Image (tube, rainbow, N blue to C red; front, side, top):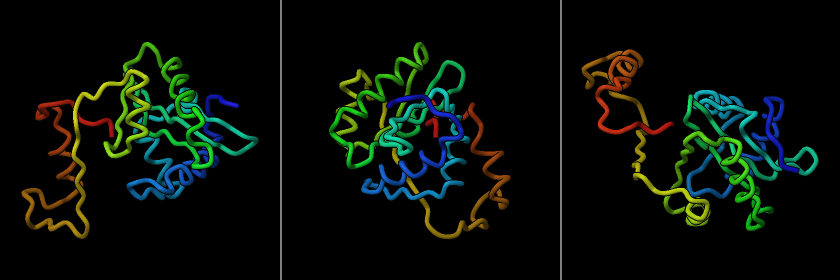
Length: 170
């Protein structure tokens, strides 16, 4: 059964998220608190998100976030046992209908060829490529013009007037 979500479904979504991304190219094993924080930070709207249920078990999901007339898919996943069944396609088609007429954006890792093919088949078009970078270890705050990390981030990196392109939803 496919239905929209409520906040009460979160624990089942967390379990499904861990299962769906258990073999993903990038390790994704967030705690329930980390996952909820990510969803909330990105603007999760449970009643505009969908999941497929077998009893109390979520077998597939699309987590949607909304800001005004913009919608963002912050996660689509299917349990390995339910892949290649058309479930992700059906969840996405229903999400697109549910979110219309909003602009619907998503990001996909280019090496995830099955997801790329699905999104293209549904009419999504690649509009840009994003590079993802990470820094492991301690920040060397002495090297920064702004030694207080949090103050530096809030005062420097959130200046939309500096952007030459629209930032990623994330």
